[in-house]
Length: 175
Image (cartoon, rainbow, N blue to C red):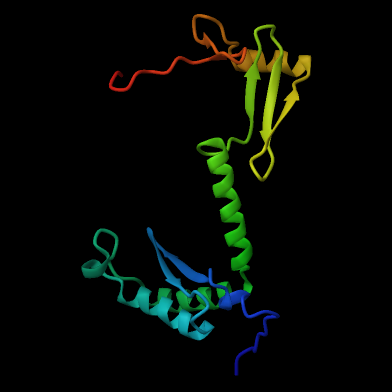
């Protein structure tokens, strides 16, 4: 008799519409979407079955069959994931990262250093929502950074309309 796990809501744990289970074998991953429609044991069986049937005829480049112990490990991994992961929170975090990506027009940097012509520097650090906050870098730190990051000058940059320098962009088709 297994452990009977009760969830306070019908949209948490394996009942979440974002639920899935995965198992990484060698150089590829097997994934079974649950979407709140499968019981834990059913999803675990499906994941173990996917590992069992994986082979050269099905997996193309990476499918070459797996050690039989991988089937049991996949079954155990699915049960553990479906009882411990918060899929709703993972979905919310992923959506927040997508909004931040759109805000920046690409990957959100951890920090952006903006050297100024007078030798001082500003630092932009985005929060977890991707909203940038500007900080002034202390003079002693800016001096140390200037040894690592070459300050912009007309030989390596062009002046940007916002008052800083930027690297000139290459034209498309030219290398």
